[in-house]
Image 1 (cartoon, rainbow over the protein chains, first blue to last red):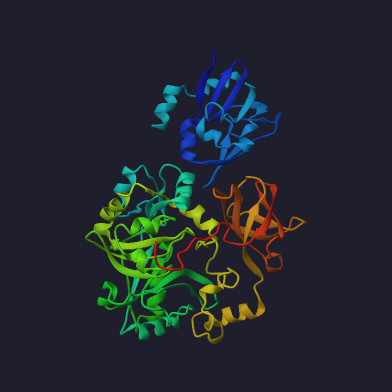
Image 2 (cartoon, one colour):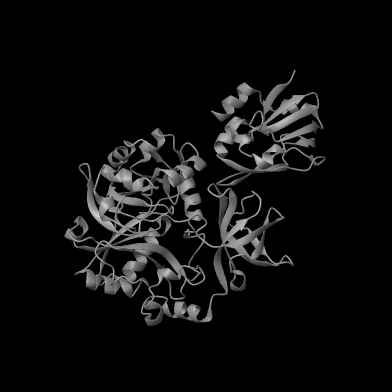
Length: 122
Length: 384
């Protein structure tokens, strides 16, 4: 069973074994405002925890998105090219950013569960 | 009055903004809402209906002197706009220059309306200046003309902007001002029992009004206007995307004290006759820039794709040499494309010229485009 975890930088990680879907939290999309462009990495690219892997742009500003753990990109959400506003309308669903293979599942232990994240953002 | 970044000034509408869900930010030393429900919704509502903006951070300066003729003649020794030929209640966009022709600020100068409250107080003209330049401008005004005119900065006044195609119709339910004013005209007025100064102008490209009112009455005035349910609040975010679509410059970004009005492509801020006769601060530099032509020119650019190209992005030639830069840029909600303003060599300033900008190491193609990007919708005649 998968469990959704959150980073202090407002990414979520929905992991099942070493396969995970990563996006930005509902709180993050609300803070960013109307999203008009999402720049995603190439499939096959690898990132270490803390690396910038994507840029989400609202009308107002560009925001870098940082890897919450080490991973290799398996799939990117190509639908966001034409419909970046999906990140606003459904950040935890249709607005996902990347699917990845985790290099080290132990790093999941560094993330927060929903209750802890909720306290972090309140 | 100045403020530190850690202690921004609350405008008279602060409590109303927070009650309306405004996301407050520090802008030029003022707490102002960057957005309420959402920037794009607020942008589109302004293009389609009417939005209310709090622009109380802008500096409202009054100029007093013996009479209008004396005061406007004196002011023309500093400012390059045609001011002496302003009609009562007339308004003019102009600039404050330094000796090298660089733009110290851009301004709206208004001649007091005949029989209005300002005139009764001995005020001949009023000047609206940028928030971040208030103190600086006041020093320049007083240094140049303090012995002939009296300048006063009115921190006791708020400024509310009602903007959009329905602004006139809505405002006409409260005052006859829309029936008296065309674009760039002002009148003393009352809304309910609230005394205010209503000017038909704005910074969105739409028809609209800026209403100057005492801080003590500002919230009541805003609530009165919100009594019309078509009026919705809009924040600084929408104000910026709207002004960019309208091709309007933002001081400190699209122009500064090292850029002259010829290069900034706002030579209309310098009166036609005055481009020959001079007699204002920076005149020699402006006249010479007109004669020699600008090296760099501010242009509008529409970029391909969806990635916004923002302030600070380099513009490069085919060999990747930097030849210019972007000074403002966003994603245009009305056009569905990235739009920007920036400076390019004059030889590349013609509409249709292909240019390349660099964003995060990537080359983005764009085309120099006429401004405004979105048609301006000003009221050339009084009425609704």
